[in-house]
Structures are given as structure tokens and as C-alpha cells.
Length: 588
Image (tube, rainbow, N blue to C red; front, side, top):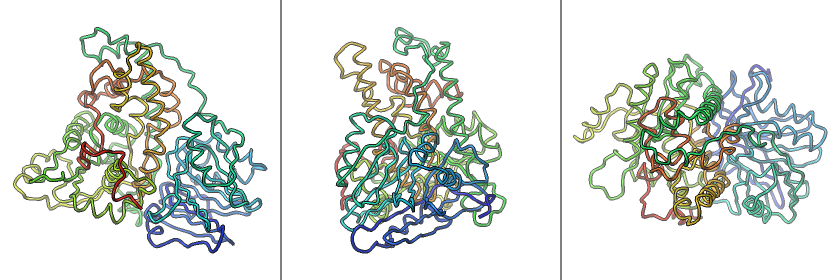
């Protein structure tokens, strides 16, 4: 293939290995959900006792390229983005990585490649000579990869349908090696395990008769941040009555830290919005001149997503529209349908603030309204397979929020708001005159604010960790630190794999600028008392550092909005539900 035409990005990847009996082919449902992830081209490779399949969503280069990619030594499947590759932009990540792997003379040399690359990815690599299979997820666990094992077969795949048994999300603990012996697994850990990671490793160990831990990889970016900032938010705000954001940004150390963080986040956003073809999903087949939105932000109107939107404005040409996708669900039991859910109101207010701050940009607020019958039908027939193997009410609620939002279709009286005509459309709703226009977002990249709450202390449990601790202030602060650490450890299994599966199903690439190596390194290098301040009220003290960032960027209203969970802000869920209960839809 001509290198000028090589391209690849988010995909559906699949591998199966025979243990006993015949390898199963892809069922109709599984093939459908893999193709949904990668509709632009597909390919299969059959070997004795093994089967590889790749489904490609084109997100780089002049045209799509097919995977699995094969040479004399390897068969390679990749789902993801490499953002720090030192290569010609015309060469795909897949080809670039395979060239590097092919020059390696040992497993250790191959692991050195993974030590230096950055970006969200999952992969499967088969060595034809040794018959070993390497697989894994990046060290932050941003892209989905599932493992299913039975007496007949081992399957590794981006997604699996709900009929599959004995399936787990592969913990992003390092690079796994499935040995030629069918029931033996080795792991090269990213770093030394903590207690939580030991528990995660045990889950996958239980599926094999033999598991061994090999040498650590120690990615270069994991090394501790060298920057040190001498400020304590708790000490600074004590006794202060003036506007807290203006006051804190007068502190030289805080200002230096905030400005450095903005530079990191802007680069992360820039990498994620410019790495895409110059065509939206409507124009990609004809490759005609495209003036539509290629980038959208999943938009509740809160501080996280509004900061991302403001930085997108810095990174994209001014004539390119940006979509803000906002979803609302019909409330159970209400007599008259109203789409004025909390997240719709905050999204409208933040949309107006963005328009005032960045008037040259064509902002599009896309209102996505979901009737309860549509929700239940899609969940029962389709979305439950994307959520698998997760089973809780919380997974059901958040998975559906992300799936409907990323699909980007306006339903019933939803609309596309560009010209300040929101009040007219709201009057039409009140008069029971549904908006006749229908619209589907053509954007192929969707930015998420994922990770901001875990990094900066945005959940009510972080505040509770402070208030419920009866010890000294130092013990209270340590309690918050412990809760932040636990949330960070759990985010791959609780959020990231699930969100990747449901959003990719709409042929969109989810990108989370807050979960980027250099940002994670910087923020986790800060102390808890530099990220949040629980002596201040909700909407101020939680994620205080991030609110200061928004204020520094010119956002004045949204920086004071309280954190609201997506399942409640969109009204898909009732607060009376227990989020940890098993969902009736997700039971096998």
C-alpha cells in the first residue's frame, strides 16, 4: 500500500483462538456491533485454530486502510490513537507501530516501544514465529478490550454481545502475553501493583491455570512531576469574603499553576480535534467540500465540558462549526412532557456564555430528546450488548446517556439552536406544536469531560470524605486524598471501557482531553489541598482548581455551577434508585 494513503483510527478489533473444537465465526449481532464501530472498511484473516477481524473507522490520512495488518512476522490489530509518534503524518499509527515491532529482536525490545508511546489504544499482536499473542490497553485504560474464555475458545474483542459467558474487561495493568500453551498467561506490568491492582490481576488470573508476572515496563510519562507549587487553598480562603476566584488568581503560585495547566489542556484538545479527516460523516464517502461540524462536545453545560468547548475555539479555524450535544429524557410518570431537565437549562445558559465570549464561532446546541419508550426499546434490543459485561443500574443509566447523546439525533420537539431562537421553540413546545425539523449530528469526534471529577475532586463522596472524618485537618485532607486515589484507580473499569463501547457504536471517536498522560502526571503531582477545598460550598470548593481554570479562560457563570451527575441532570434515572443494584435489562 502507498504510504500516502495509509490511515487508521478507532476500530472494532477481534481475535479468537481455538482450545477445543472449532473456532466460532462472528455471529450476526456481534458482527453488527463491531461494524458499527468501524463502518469504513473491514478485513478478516483465518489461520488454523485462529481468527482475526478488524473494522475500521477512518479518522486520519487521505483514505481508510484495512486491518488486520500482516507481514512475515506479525498480524496486528489496533484500536486507538498514538499522539506522540515521531513519524510522517501520512503513515498510519498501525503501520508505524508494526514497522517498529518488526525491528525488535526480543520481547524486551518490543516492550520498549510501549514504554515510550502515548495515547488511548487497545491492541492485539500475534507473533507467527513463537505463536504468542500480545494484547492490552494503554496504561490509563481509555479504550475497551474484553476477554472471554470457555473450554473451547479464547476471545479478545473491543466488544462482545450479552449472550457471551465468562467475560471480563481486561484490566489495564500492562502488556499481556497469551502463550502457545492455551491456558498460560504472562503479564508485563506497567508499574508495581498497589492493592487495588492486585485485586484486578486476580480477576484475570482466575481464568487461567497458569499466570506469571514478568518485568515492569515503567512508561516514561509515569515518572513523578518535577513541578512544585507552594500554595494551600484551605489556608488561602480562610476568612476571605471577597470574590474567591479573583482573590485566588492574585496568588502568584496559583496563577503559575493554572496557566501551565491551561497550556497542557489546550495541547491535549488540539491533538484530539485536529487529528481527523476534513469531512464529516455526511460528506466522508464523496470526499466533497465540507462545511459541517466535524467535532462535537458532549455538553451538560457544566464546568468540565464548557472549558473544553472554550479551548476547542482556540484550536479550530473560526469558520468551522462546533456542536454541543445535550440529551434529555422523558421523566417517568409525568403528565405533560417537558424537556427542561436540569442539564438542558445549564446547557442553554453555558451555550449563551460561549456565544458571548466567542462570537465568531458558529456554536450549535443540539437538543436530543428521548421518549421513555424509545429508551426502553433501544436498551433492550441493542445498548445492553454494548454495556456487557457491566450489569448495574448506574451502568445502564450512564451508558444510555452517552449512547443517545453521541448518536446526536433530535427527536420529537428537539432542535438545533444556532440563532438565539430557543425561546420561540420553547413556546412551540408549550403550545404542543412539535418542531418539525429533524437533525443528526455529522461530527465524527466527540470530546468528553471524563476524568475531571476523579482528578480534581468533583464528586459528593470527596466532600463526604472530608466532612465525615472526625480527625484533625491533616487527617481530613488525607481522607480526601485516599478517596481521590481510589476513584482514579477505578475509572478504567467503572467508566472508560463502557463509554468507549457505547459511543463508538455510533461511528464516533470519543476523546477525553483530561485523561492525557502529561495532564494526569501534572494533576496527580498536586496535593489534594491544591485541587479542591471542601470548606467552601458546593459549586465553589469542589474542583476549585478547575473552576479557577475556567475563570482564567473568561468563563464567569459556569464556574459557579454545582456538580450534577449525568443520570440525574438528564433525568434518565431517579435518585430513589440504588445505582449499585443489578439492572433488569443487563442480566444474562
